[in-house]
Length: 159
Length: 121
Image 1: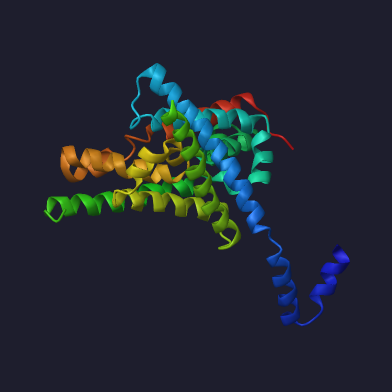
Image 2 (image 1 turned 180 degrees about the horizontal axis):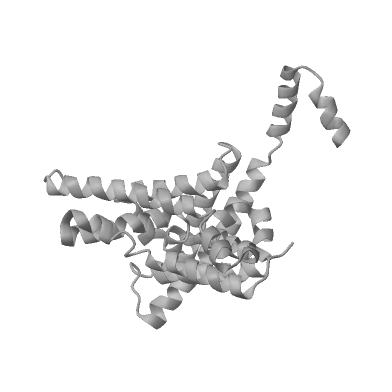
């Protein structure tokens, strides 16, 4: 492995790049997509079951049920992350486990667990949103722009 | 009963497809997971701005609420709801109204997880 890597380094850069491209093409995109589709779909089916549970037993409507469902999925993600299962699902499913909110939960919770050795205030508190912070930042900022534009258009009577 | 199964089916298909889009952004566009998720959240917010996310949620249920795109959607949704009531300041006050539980659950369960579980490896 090491020897072959050094062999690649010695030829001219163009040949190296060709080699690299050949290597890049080997990414099993179709296989990855199928895995992501099934695991991601499975998470959503579990979410749908949780939604029905809240609709039938806690009087949520189909419009408002997203909120408690997301919280429950984050709870499941805590258990899966804590027992080390979520990492394995992630290695198998790629985006199938990252795109559902459980992936967001996993990002927060794994950062919490990982940094607890540095103490609860500076470790857990400071690093909690290390990975998930970008999602919150861009979500809130883009939502702000979209809602602002739409509200202004409404006030000016365009919409 | 038929509608119940249809909901599960479409939740599976639509949720799976959104994950495939994420996987394509990983593999084809070669974005990092952080970039991909940020992009999907922004897409969700913009889609709701055009009023396109709500129909998808009616159609696919959890298939649309579970992927991270729904986070952007519900942020815009809350902001617009309060903006209708209180005018421009509602954009700020309503931002987290609909998606409150996602954030609070992540914080609470994250801390609980740090209390209960020990880091591995």
